Length: 107
Image (tube, rainbow, N blue to C red; front, side, top):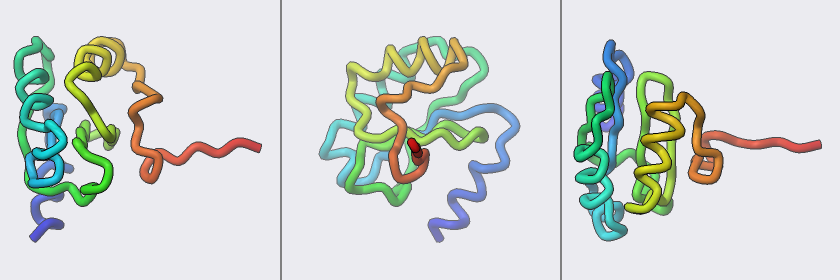
């Protein structure tokens, strides 16, 4: 079932900000994060609450599709930064990138 849910969002023509609204993310403040994204003028981006995105230990989880950027432990204070730097400015917010999905290597 989770796979079907993800497939529905991975083929979107319009970019989307997906904010997990499942139990552990809700307990960490994801309802407020979702509301904050919805309060902003995001131009071409839709904002939706989602079921579990499978990152319960790192929530609240925010996923930007179709580009597949995953942010973890997003707090209310992070929303303006993500909106301005990423959604409007086109630059990912490195400090909030999910480390298991966006691995960084140094040599």
